Image 1 (cartoon, helix red, strand yellow):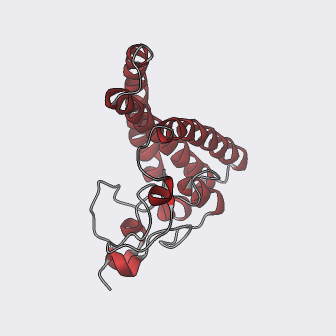
Image 2: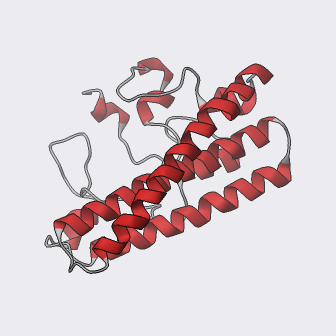
Amino acid sequence: MCAQTVTDEFSLFRKQFQPRPDFTFKWLANKSDEATRDKVEKVGLVQLQEYYSKSEALNVELSMLTSTLPHTPMSEYFMALQLTSLRAKHRACTVNAILAHREKRKDDKAHWLQKAAEIRLQGLEFVNLLEQDYKYNAAYLYAERYSHTSYPYGYLYAPICSTSGNGREQARRNRWGYNFMSIWKVGRIIGL
C-alpha cells in the first residue's frame, strides 16, 4: 500500500506508467497551496471514499456468497476485491495525514496514520488467509533470491509487510525519496 511507485518518486526518470496525480506527495506535504489541498480534499478524497463505500457494499453481498463456498479461485477473487477496497480506504487515510501535516494539525495527522495502520492490519489478515492455500514453496515466494528480472525477490517478498505501510511511514516521517524503505533496485529497473 505504498504512496507512489518508485518511478513517480525518482524525478530523473519521472515517467508515468500508472495513473497518478499532477503533483507528488512530497510537494503536497511540504509546499502545496490551499487551492490544491482544497481540490484534493473535495475531489480526490471524495472519489476514494465513494469508491470504497460502493465496493464495500458489493463486498458485503459477495461475502455472503463466499461464506458458503470452499476455498476456490472465485473466493480468492472476492478477497482480492476486498483488498482493493481496503487499498482505497488506506490511500484516503494516508492523503488525509499528508494534508494534516501540511496544515500543521498534529493530532489529526496521528489519527489518520493510526487509521491507516488499522486498515493495513485488516489487509494483512486477508493476505494471511490467502497464504494458507498457496501451492508453491514459501521460500520461493517470499525470499530474496537470484533472478534474471529487475526484481530479485520472490513474488510476495515484502520485508516491511508485517510492520508498517510504506506510504504511511512516508507521511509519518515526511520522507519522500525514491529509495526510502524501497525494495526496488532502480539501476536494474532502468537496465543498468
